[in-house]
Image (cartoon, rainbow, N blue to C red; front, side, top):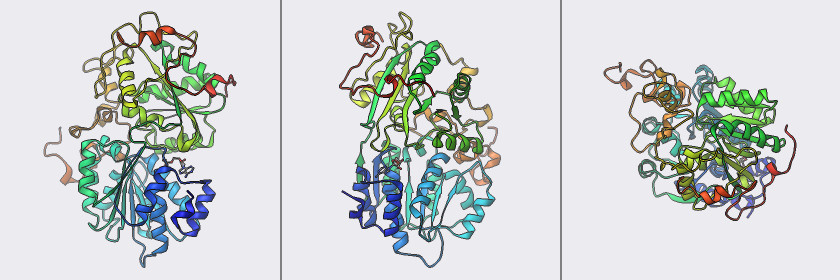
Length: 496
Ligand code: AMP
């Protein structure tokens, strides 16, 4: 199949060629014709499948071929994080090249005025995070009377991050007669509810639902807490110059680890919620351009970021849920390229390893790296079954009641930045790790002074069976499953 079969406008075909896309990805092949016909769509697809172009191309085709008389927003794309919003905005600009269309991006943490000016000048496409867009709506800076298409991207993340009430307020300001496209990697009950409320007679397109990308090779590294950093340095030494994203559990760990990597001579940066928007942009741009080889990030800061050349994802700390594992490794092996996912596990992580394996419906190969084997007995302790909520940990980073440990479970947020409202029913507990700058948080999470009076609450004070045999084999490269031979980390290339 080729892009020509979609009968897209010539300028879009030229821009697709310029982007280097030769054939549509499966979600593009399935979704583009339905969106072009004007159907509502439920896209069950994870990041890395090419879903951005799957919705942008048919939307832009319609905007180009049916020009409007006035320039008011005809398409609104909502995304959970600034990074994802920026990324979609960039793709929009790339695909719009050579047309008369205009787009803008709206998110918090930066000045309102340039956004107000862009909105007043008139745009065809708005890409936005819900919180700041709601501010503009409330201040009368934007109207959606002429809106034709709404896209809700990464709807499950928006829900996890507590944006559902904001989204519902935005929906109330949109014309009822419109096309709505909803994309989500998972389908918790709240998202089914949102889909039932917002979509009319939708077509469902399901690509790689809940399954990690097939182009990714996985490995589990049993290791003691104090050997994680040395093991990472060892693996980086073998990674050559390929790009690496390293995930840590907290902002402080991301910052400290990035500093440690720099001290060891690596070109590393970090992406975590304590950074200003400018610092985040510098980190992301530097990583995209290759001036930083390693990006150390927390889950929320890195949500949905697309760096197509990422070769390795290292889970320095195991994620809190099996779904989070899928989202993390979605950063590598993107668009049919090979990638590797390396997960460091300590004895207490074995319950989560089992949860991830059952989620993926296959065992993950273990690798013991000589010189970094866990301490004897570490994996003989019985690992507790994972809770769906963020687990209290033993040993390193153990939470103490009411003390620093509690702050760690809260994602190291300063006390004043914690959400005040209850977590939405069914939202995953890892959403409590709120990495967003204040202005990108849902309205209910913001300090009272940031909220309009009507939104304020009345009172403002307000393993024993851990496959011992697999680990016990203890080979330097102890695989299970039908794995392809390892590529980069075994190639003996020297450090960058
Ligand atoms: P997305 O899932 O939209 O974040 O896309 C993931 C990556 O795949 C991005 O780097 C896109 O530029 C790239 N991509 C999307 N569609 C194609 C395609 N048809 N061929 C090659 N790369 C693509």
